[in-house]
Image (tube, rainbow, N blue to C red; front, side, top):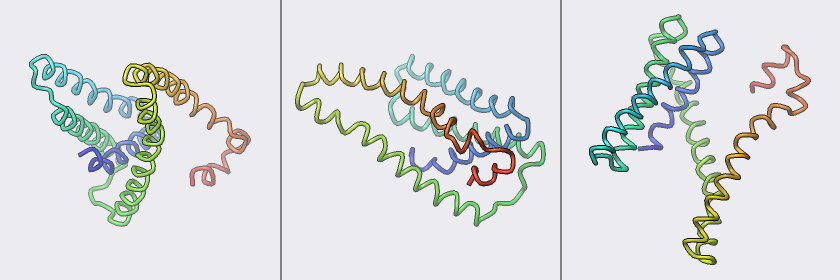
Length: 169
């Protein structure tokens, strides 16, 4: 279920970026905000009633992502950025890229987690809990600073407007 929504999530990112580039930052920010507000309220109500299961949470997450995508698409159509027909070649290219990206990200996170199997065997579950907390905190610091590190790459810092096509590819 999570993998099936990858094309939807890629389009959500695309439409959010397109709207931002066309000065519609509020619309781009409002769609995920509304979607996550709905997710929080419904998941909270389901959890309070004892009806929240892992599969229901995943299904709810997919539904909210679909709503977010729909809101972004409607906002794009309202300002004339989205047409009424699908571009099959673009969809194929997007799906092909999305599958490769998904597999890459999956292996990346598996690589980050494979050490936990070894640690649990060596120090037991209590030690693994401490280790997992320490690693999670370290990853937060790394993930928070990684975009800043990428944004100060020399070729990006010295680029001007004529280089935007080259840097975008």
